[in-house]
Every structure is written in C-alpha cells, then in structure tokens.
Length: 125
Image (cartoon, rainbow, N blue to C red; front, side):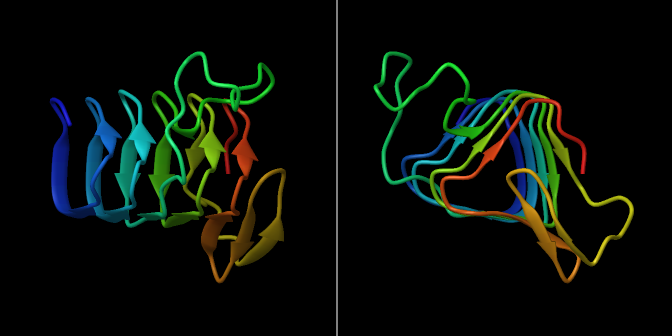
C-alpha cells in the first residue's frame, strides 16, 4: 500500500493498493488496485493468484487482473479473479434495480461483477 486514503476498510493480506481512495469497503486477498481508483461501499473478493506483466493469464483483449487506473466503484460486489478496465465507472447513478449488462448484472440496485468477469475500459453503469 502506498500513498492511499483508507477509511473504514477491511484490507486482506497480499493486496496491492497504490494512490487510491477506499471507504466503507472490504478488500479481499491479493486484490490489485491501480492508481486513481475510488472505491466506496463495495466488496472485492480478491484473486486466486497474482498476475505479472509477463503472465500467461494476461491476454491482449482483457484488462489486467483487478481494478484498473481511475476506476470508480460505488455499491459494487466484485467476485474473484475479475478484471475491471481503466476509467470504468460502476456507480448505478440511474438507480436501476434489476439489469444484465456486458460483464456485470444489477440486483436490488447493487452492481455485481461475477467470478472471472471482465469489464471493458471506459464502461459507464
């Protein structure tokens, strides 16, 4: 963890948290959160493995494992091994109660990214 603001957060071991803001959230094991991310009222379940830049798990058409740069999450559940691309904004500003989207779904107003889910960079929900 470096140069980040955490308030009312449970942070599991092995996380990489760099220059971000997290409040009222639970961050699971081996979660990778890139600079500029803002996370509020969310639960991130983490990852089963670490992923390096040269890892076989990385594919050119998918974001890096974890939370990308300048991502905003509010009231989101992110299951294990999910990938959220840079500049994605998952906040449900419209207050949608039930919906299915590309790489996510909304239930009772809460955005859920399923296990191994991928959110493309720049997505707005």
